[in-house]
Length: 475
Image (cartoon, rainbow, N blue to C red; front, side, top):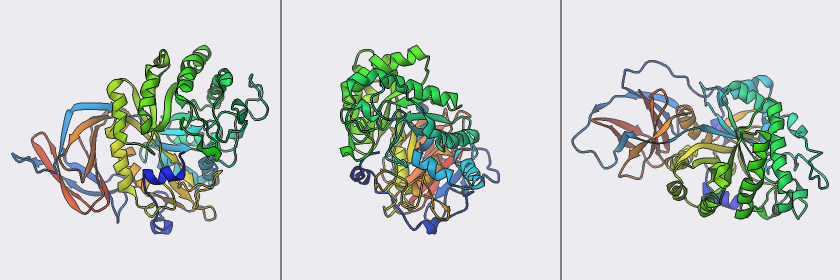
């Protein structure tokens, strides 16, 4: 997590009254009725409805010339495949979800993870404590222990592992990636998990720390498919929270000299993603990829969007077309005015991420209480869902409703399709699912308007409400 000022600069998303959007657990409507072959199904979120089905739209012959704002699709041009969408199972989120009545949690997890509902499938866990934890902890506390004789994931057995099992039960295709906010304090010169930097002499021990973590989770029936070296490599967060600076050469040397070889020796197949920080580190990303032997062990960059422009990902992608891009963190502040209705802002962000090569989008905390607790701050992040600390009422923020227009419709293995428009007031991104179903997400952060969609010699007219997200789906 970045500091609060950069979060505010990143995306000013915050909340209406939670009560204004309080809703039962089963808030997502089921598909209903039939749509004629070739007709477009329409799903809308705006000021009066949440991912609700609208009237179907028919294709018509396209005019000889298209209006300026027409979104033109070219399904022959395909880009990156999609892995999926999700959020982070932080210690705080798992603690919050664990406090729900089991039957309520089962319904919520069905809604969040089942393929027929939100289908969240790319989720993050923390290797030890993050800033959103009930306390600061690592898996090897105390004095220096280079042989890791004390290593234990016992802390996670209380509620983190149970929540992960429950999620994977609802969605067996759950892809987990894990990130540390800090190595154990004894691996840093300051002796603390708060701030500081990695110490080279402990890199061999730290590589084994990763191996033991992955083996421990595997033994619990929860294999982790990818890891990042460090959450936000380029900051120590002023010592306010678990964090650790990793200079560029440290991360590159750790991957090629310690972690990659340790994975080989242990037979670990987990993927390694580097950077796990902001767009402005695009130059660092290229520098690490250029370092000899780094690409022997990693072929992926993890991005956050708190600093810089999403288009800067293209600088890396152009130089290394086969490198995979993933978006691994971003979440709202519960004190922001449109926390509860910022779906168009978040959808605009998601569209930019997907149009710039990312294969997944993973938000920050799955769930927190009504004042963004627990955390080791105080910090002001809000959850994707809010579970009231006293009533256990569940409410859904604007980011959740933005996700609904992507995760429910864009399936793993989908490819992004080319879409172009001369206008800039409607944001657009298009996909083709493995079954041939086509999806377009249109985001209109401004006033009500009509948008034309053109595919070959056909066109369709789409009404877009104020502050709306609209998903189109057809065969």
